[in-house]
Length: 335
Length: 227
Image (tube, rainbow over all chains, first blue to last red; front, top):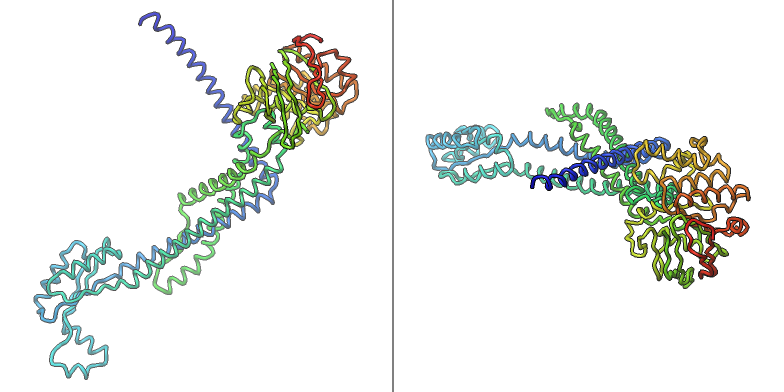
């Protein structure tokens, strides 16, 4: 494999080099054509500013609505996460448990990993409080002994302050001997979680519907653009333009519509948040809350623009598939 | 270069446009396709451009059988065929230069090459000075020459023309025909559909005559020389 083997290898290498450079020039031409088409389709949109602005506005509103609701939802979920810190487990001990035993149990529960703190309410203390607050002092005097048990108020650690975490803690406490009853005030928490879940689902349904609407609007706009450029499409097909070549300007047009719509949506969102946040803060202060509407973070904004571009492109793709392939240059040549 | 073997074309409404048409055009040959309107001239050109498929028989262009050509291959066949139409099919939203550049653009030719080749084609038809104008500003004869420049800018081996002199006065028509002769002299196979009998007779070239879809005379195959 010395000389005879090397020669073809050399030739192969040269051939590969040549095809490489020609592949590169083809790629460069391809790229410059893409750039030209992208510029040209953007230019066409600028040339019809009113029509383009209307499409952008429709798309912007359709995108801003679900994204705004999602932002509101995220803010609400942040608030309910704050409220969960109030979750507490109340443990009623059995009647016969003595004060010393109750204190021992208190320190054992305080030693659990998922417990942040335990406050003990002695049965006498409880009775005194009850007597003072209920107005049943006279009735209580008729009782021979204190009917109230010792009570432990258990506060979970931060990590366990979820509906599931608190449930698990309650189960663990119930298994303790001398514990008569464990009461978790989770009802309202679960209701809130269920509500935000429901609202989230409704918002997602709305999001899907509006995304479909955006695709249809862009598809229809592109359909009109295809009709307007019928002659150009015919000539391009006649001189050997591939389907991809003919489709390209319309796909770019769709993407530009998407980008414009995404920018309009961002502007609408920022303006709405800025306009609403003053009153929302004032209201929140009245409730001792630092609640504020969260704006769209940078990655969220970029994501919104990307989604908008993809939706525009998709709408254009649907229109192009449906209407462009039907245009054939046969009609040019006459009957 | 172009070969028809027993080609028939029937449209759905049992109207038969072509019946058993057979002929062969060699490289560099210039031929006229004549016949009354409705005789099947346009159908024959459409078969070559793959705008229609034959009902029976074989159409071969440049050694490729077109009957079974898959749809996605059609653009690549059309890149080897220049076509000129009576109504020019120019686009009025762009300059003469951009009109002529279209066949090169669809092929992905680089920017510099496009400039060079478009100017060469415009020079050939004598319109180099008007490259920046809109076709609307040109006369009918000039528009037709822009159409011809577009048809030949990528140097196709086959050039088809459908009534290219239909709207032109005799002097301009002779100019256009002279251009076609020049292309055939450099090896392009040229087929011109026309019913301008006087012009055809003055050219003294091969004639394919269609009558109600049948080829009456196919002339002799003599590449590049008058029949």
